[in-house]
Image (cartoon, rainbow, N blue to C red; front, side, top):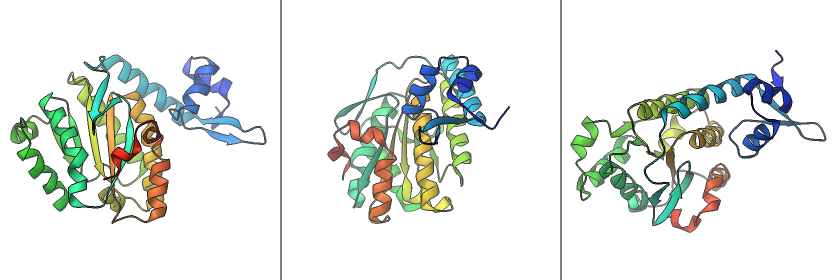
Length: 247
């Protein structure tokens, strides 16, 4: 089979309508390449098979969340939301993320924290002091899962999250929470462009799983150009009150 498929061929491969393929690509769920003056869609067979495989697994395993929304910064956010947040102080780093995690841990919802070094220590210290949170139990029961970085390439990082989310769903959990400190993630990738490419690709995963993810950018560590690209890579941020996520 050819490497790139048309909309009709993609629909036949997945056994769905062409309208579904067009909708999923417009929503960012399916990676798509536009060609020619008419900007016709072309799809990678590998992307299509990965989408079909992961979507079916998630559909078999996941149960509807107990609540259709998650609170972040006083806002009710839909499951499947992938946001960027920006801060310029150590206190700003924790303002949204710690209550977001504390609510999850109290509700026994898995929380994935991507951070390292002193940044990780600051999170653990704040969560230990949070009312109602038993940090030791959360770590031992793997309700709080920490990782330095999920991978060094876009492909490896996506594979990490797919496996992590599927594992949590198979354990019966209904809502997944993620906070990623992007300064540390950036250091693992070969370039900031690769990091942004991962952020764009993560939009697809965030719509397949019952996850709310907040990617945190310390503006002291990034140029204005990278901050702009990070904003563009998180279209969900424009559907909420963006000012809440500028700390």
